[in-house]
Amino acid sequence: MSLRDRFRSVNSRTEKAEREDSTGNTASSAVTVDGNGKGNGKSVANALNDRTSGLKARIHRRMVERINLANLDSIAPEMLRAQIGHIINALVVEEGIPLSESQRLSLEQEVMNETFGLGPIEPLLHDPDVSDILVNTHNQVYIERFGQLELTEVKFDNDEHLMKIIDRIVSRIGRRVDESSPMVDARLLDGSRVNAIIPPLALDGPILSIRRFGVRTLNLSDLMELGSVSPGMAEILKGAVKARLNMLISGGTGSGKTTLLNAMSAFIPVEERIVTVEDAAELQLLQPHVVRLETRPQNIEGKGEITQRDLVRNALRMRPDRIVVGEVRGVEVLDMLQAMNTGHDGSLTTVHANNPRDALHRLETLMLLSGVNLPPQAMREQISAALDVIVHVSRMSDGTRRVVDVSEIVGMEREVVAMQEIFSFKRTGISEDGKVLGRYEASGIRPKFADRLEISGISVPASLFSEGQVI
Figure 1 (cartoon, rainbow, N blue to C red):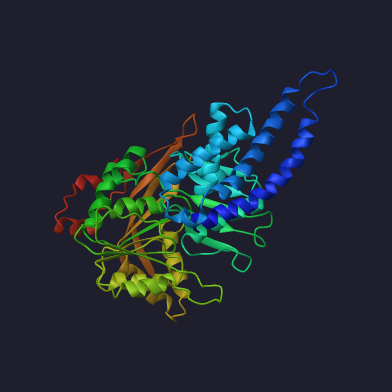
Figure 2 (cartoon, one colour):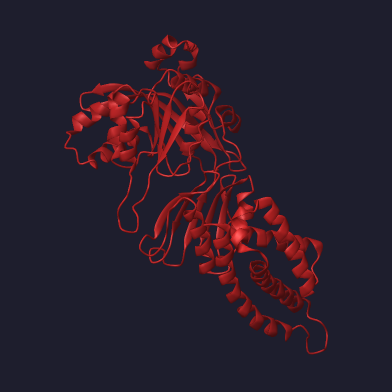
């Protein structure tokens, strides 16, 4: 959506708000003096808030009148912001509303956010401590901060206001949300993941969920400082990437799978060609030779859909050294496993699962969705041949994310995929302030891939795998 269209859409909504405000001001002014002739401070404050709300509506309308919409898209954003700031200052003086400097600056920022950003939730997007923004209809907004949910005072004017913000988000990447397509996945300019679902599927009104990326991408050193992974475990994961082991990261929703995938991908050599496949682009690889592919939903006629399976198949024709699939959640798992088995070693992907064994079962289930009539034994052999390591991450009760298990796939034992645990996080209790206590330990098993690490020039001390060794 262009800035010109954005101004027009904002103006159409604020004209309605202005009409409503003219009625509200009359009611408010009638109660500013009590029966004894004394001023009612609370009523005066309410009247001022009402007048300020109406002022925002009039500012939007007057801006549209004063700014040349034909040239709006060609004006640099910084210059446009400065011009709008001057208009706001002039209008505040004309209206004669007694605003303090802080109130005027707050009003200016609200108008700026409404015009250029995502309205009332724009300040939350600039808070580095906020990791999730959850909008439950127009009058309830939750955030996640440091792993804990908090109810905020942020509100939208009404459902129409919230819908305009949702439309603004999805239109940026060529997607739509309406009654014929009431669910949509999208992303913000910084890569943050967005999901929206609207009536009739959402019974109480539009629902918006934003899963934010941090200001900067976390690396393994950052994860070690946060306690999400131990130094010894980090060395093994780094070596596994460099030695081109095929790795699967499993975990629940919000457990940090993508964060760990980003951190591990930093150790892929810069001279390799990497092709990423995602449903909604969110990976942030730092290598110079990266090709990013993203799925496309069907259009309003029900045509033109491009699935992850289509992209994985196409990626095989693009001469990749490694293929990174953001998350396997459908029939593309079969093509991904085949790619791992046919020369594209060192590939990485993630999957939703409760534990490493459950991740293998989920892969089998997803393979069945492909419609290929494979016996269970053949599917398990395909999985055991393709994967080398499963890394399981979990979100703890205190909101922290940790790598809780690193396991190796060692082949088949009769009809079962054989897997052995290398490292794990052992919980020991909970502190007085609610923090999960525990330690990272080795299982005492030396993994078979240790030989591949040594062949690749990666030195791993044997003591790291000693049973009970705190790593």
